[in-house]
Image (cartoon, rainbow, N blue to C red; front, side, top):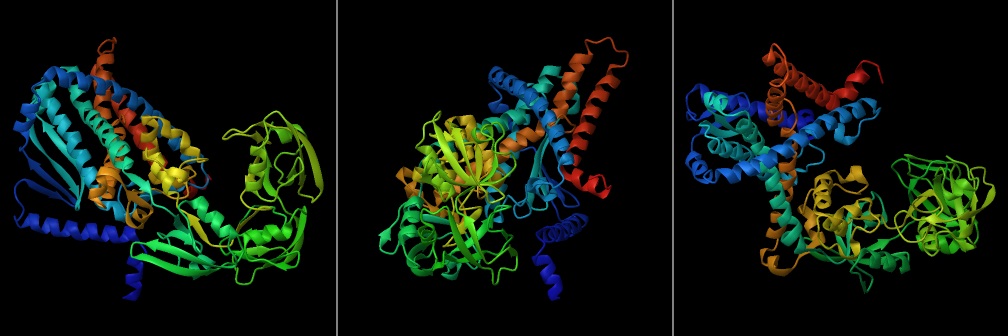
Length: 623
């Protein structure tokens, strides 16, 4: 019994499938005994609810026919563009999936399902908002089809919703088939494009509300937002957890992450930290220890971190427990003797417990054609940079600071140690930095010192301000500065694109996937202005708008795929009929069928290869 319980607890997908089977059995049992109303039809886990209610309402709002036709014509043009783009996107994604030896997280089969808790990017905590957004999207989509039916004089036989188990997965409008065939080709095309048009317009409305008054009322809360705590770190030992907001270091209040880092750097080995969570404020004592929590390949110390950190106990014989003590012990010397303690780090490799190494910013590689490469620095080989024009450099941050003070076009002396531990110098003319002010020498640098990511606390920041700014809000001092996606916030289309990829943030260089203002994340934000009277309701409203917009645009794009029975497939048939009617072909019906069936088969093959291509090729031994 315990083994069975453990199996279900560790496999969400298996639990969901079991629930679906139980629901299907119960629904079919009720159907067979005539318990269900006539309007409800059951086929396995699929339940269909049919009705004619709402038809009179559609008749009333269909009165301004010219207006609705004009809107539908605009939507039809957009749908045609989206059809071509989606066709190209599916094929290119399928080819990419085939060529990828190790599929990314987004290519895992469960991540193609918009099911919270099953999809790795959609947490269960936002299931109500996702389900509500999905229901709104489907009702709007099918309602628009019904509206254009009435605008074009096509009668409606029935309307309804489709449920998979308890989840709304579709809606439908059944136009009268004979009336549909009698309508003009343009009328049918507008009717088929109406759903996509409505979803797009709804996306514009909900994102306008989200980016405007709702997100505008939300601001980052003061303090350091804890996004993750390293296991067995000093912070973990002090019971600091994800969702905490650190608001004071000792007697020093901190309002921003930078203030926290500055105060922590100035503190000693033992420090008092004031933390706030949903239950209130508490003060904890943190005893700091210096750890290597990440490593670059080929680093001078020869440390490889897989999961367990490695402790640094001394530099030049002096005990160290913080990053500041580490740098103070190194001083201005280019090299230092570092002592590590690998006890308990089973998933780490240490070449030697004590070694003399150069201490500097660790360049993972030299860019081809960059300033350093132009002066003879070899490509593909790491370089430990210890000084720039006489200014000592010990970390990646110090390298950035030194170069920020140099004008592009000036020549500086770069001193470093190569992979053979030989001291090398280069006279380099600086290029402009691609992302900020100052000079650029053409290298990619690993965080920390000498290829070692150092940490003496064990808590990483949740970039609350960054996510808020990517949604059009004011991120304050914790905004998008230096973030790769920061250039998206300057236009409405950029904000829409940012919102679409935020749930997949980890794939785009962000430290966490953003699922909305939910759970402990609400501790990282405060509500200001007129919406403050709603309190936590503002977060609920923001989540509903976020997921409604996200699902609407996904539904619109999916329905643009040129494959039957999707709207894109029906529009493709209208286009094919219009083109073939002007071509001297003996069997026009067969030609149209060939075009539509071929497109559908290509789309189906593309989707299968996107989801299962890597697994299929692996099973065949082709990769």
